[in-house]
Image (cartoon, rainbow, N blue to C red):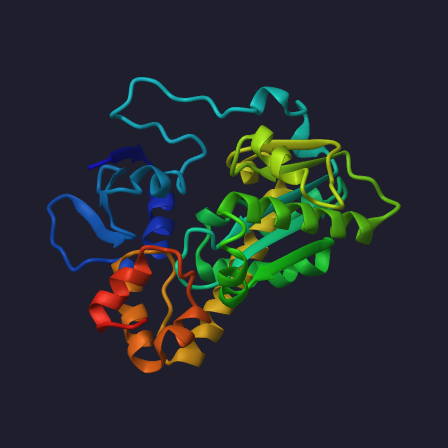
Length: 311
């Protein structure tokens, strides 16, 4: 079982507890502030300030809470590839940033957003509290999203589960995201024309060579001044703002889907998703499930076993 330990100040632990408030476990463990479980990973916050993440997605969950996760179990840290190629004063430049949400969630859409943040708007975005969406509660994200939309130009694309299931056999996950990022960036460039950004930062989900390989199949390609880095929201507020807009739209879409099916659709792809999918199958079969879930996920077969035989 993978595990990561990080150290956080008290005020950050409070935010962490608020973030996991719906996943808190009723456990009385000595010297702990709380215990939670999300997507198969157990999060234990100790009174000392140490946070233990245990489970398959331990590193992913831990990365939500520190810019660079200082694992006490590892003697070395891996450097973020691509940072050497970034402009030294990147955070102060007028940039387009793009990010996506929903790729790892069984329920809900895949959303990509591109935001243009010029030098004048950067201090205002910072004043609003724009930062890595993983460091914000869902309530914070929903509060920030409309304020960001009023402040900066953006282009948001949403692929519903129904549409996703139609195109997924022809497009793998990486190819699909390349197409969406390229389209969102291209449409945003048209929107802000004749203004030209000083660069475009894409929250990296695949090596640059892979991105450009898939890009060759597109009729209208954005190829100039592209930069790629993982955790891009930590390098420029344009990516952080895009991440927040993506997440807010994703949450709204989950809410709409929940009302349509009569069950609360969870984020992620854990056992809760299997159980809800089984209930949807019992209610409306595969036709109803296909409107709200990405069917190629392993959750579909698990749900079928829970619900009975559905073809």
